Image (cartoon, rainbow, N blue to C red; front, side, top):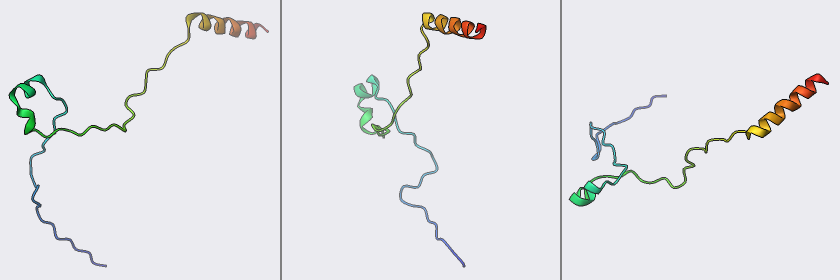
Length: 74
């Protein structure tokens, strides 16, 4: 099996990597430069960061430690 490919530069070919803007600043609004800048699209279906988990209440922690001590004593 012989496979061959023809590769050509497309109309959007560029050697520079253009990073889209992620934030709209007051300076962009004042100067009007935001009209010519590419912006990164929003992803409304992303889950985001998980919330930080909580911890035991201090009294519950003491209760579990006392329970463990009594269980070890029999």
